[in-house]
Image 1 (tube, rainbow, N blue to C red):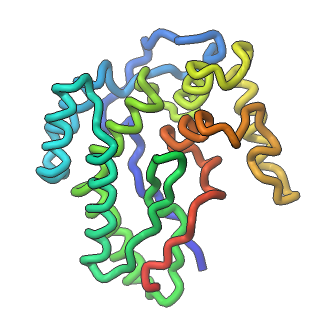
Image 2 (image 1 turned 30 degrees about the horizontal axis):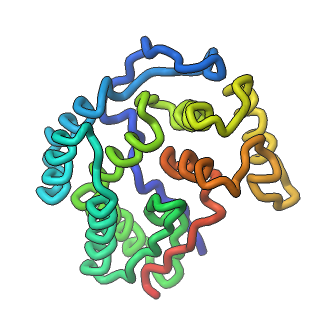
Length: 230
């Protein structure tokens, strides 16, 4: 039996979204371009003000403030390993790394085989605790700088903007076109893969970076199932 769990909270919960963001290209016309931060310093400082993140994460964030918000990959990887070890220390197997072009994913598909309802609820709580204390803040700052420098609150808007910024789609590719392609993919009953439906190349590493940095559900087919009891 599989359950889908939401491991990362909506990024818009970090701060209220401004509705006055300037659109970076015509492809975003008509989209909600509200922002959840005004700058990397703003985002990082908001994370530093939150007591739920452990001191190891805050050390990484403080260092990033001195380097234009940049987080070294080694620090990013270490935070993810700390998250995986946190779950192992609670008695679970380590979740798969689920790397996509160097970007990590928390387990999206979790096998609940052998778990009672009470154990399943406890596992969800343990995941939330390990996520918040060990990796969430570092992960959000790292992904935002990489794939959403305009701080768009809508991850689909951030994705299309990323594709435009890296010249991975034609300049006339719009949010409406993306949404039509996404709806066609979601309504497909033939078992086709995402790459069969979209105008961008899923074999392009830069495309994968945009998808992964913005936590696109189009990545889910590439993720390994986590079996917490082995």
